[in-house]
Image (cartoon, rainbow, N blue to C red; front, side, top):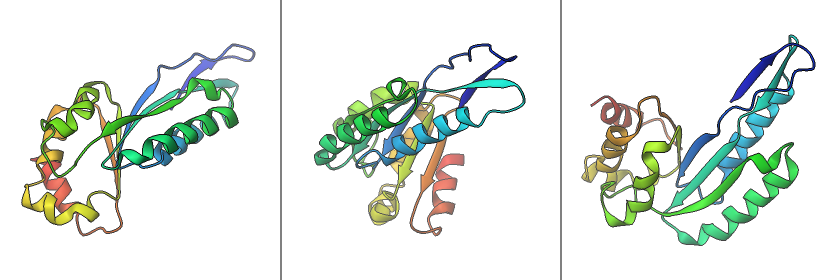
Length: 173
């Protein structure tokens, strides 16, 4: 999450932004965590190097559009509290439905963001939709894994480990 410049007194290089998409990310906690981690990492650089925080640019997609106001509020809070907070940004990208194909109209805004995304964070929407995901052969995730750019990373945080083998099979499929 950082770039480094060597030598004392040198201004840190500014790394390009890390593009984060949060799936089922509700109020934007994934963005807040990534922005805090980036800021913390830059603050603890050592060994004579200066490290600059990678700006976090995040889009939150959720089944519930009601999260949009909270995403905006959390983004404003993060930006006002963190050092260089104005470098980070987060907005509600729109609604999505992980039980439908990525090509479904309800996922069109997400699909447009997929090619430019560095990190996908999926929290708690796999377990709560397990039956419908299984019934669709995980078509959403199959599409997402196929359409993401090479080098994209996925962080899937769930309430149970029991679904990991199924997600791994789709990812490797």
